[in-house]
Length: 239
Image 1: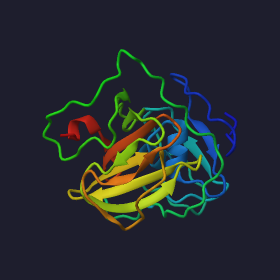
Image 2 (image 1 turned 90 degrees about the vertical axis):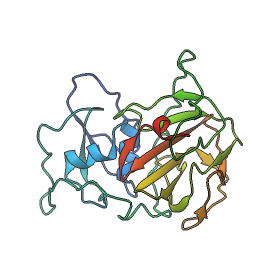
Image 3 (image 1 turned 135 degrees about the vertical axis):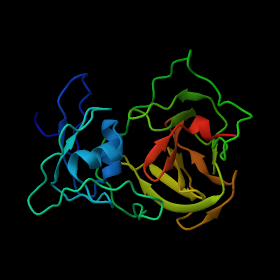
Image 4 (image 1 turned 45 degrees about the horizontal axis):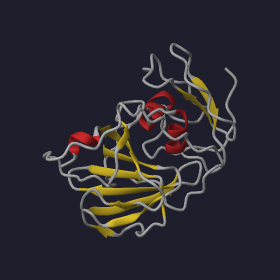
């Protein structure tokens, strides 16, 4: 298939289709590419033999699997680049710098709200985290398709830390939307996307319920919980 440019819209996934190709634009990160195509950064790394820091080069050609597609073989890498399968990183490994420039690419579409599936998070659980936003869950966790939950949040809605920890990174997706990563005990990280008006900086210590910022104009906040880069269902981790 023809390679996708850094500014073209991502092609829609087709069941049974072959992996796609993507040419890395200046400043583009593995996280931005994975989010754009709706795949996990771990799958992207496995298919392309990316290093443990997920570093990319401008002009590098990536093979992008269909969501949930298993790599029958690792992609051939550019000469001079190693192709070890990356070790699942822990929270001790470096995260993206908050000042990493991003390539211009369309923002991911807002989730299609299924009113029959819309719900609030279960309360009274035994997990270590709390809901970061007071709103209904409009898109649930689906491993390999949606590595978190999307929570309805009108512009200006407070977004709070789900647990006590330290702000490990503040970066941006390919559309310039801020992403906050908070590191917690137990090799856990929480990820918050779709914010505006940030109230924290990289390195800040935060407590559960402390304001991180407010929701932007997308109408929802995307929230993930990860062990290293391995996503887990946030609803199973909420109290």
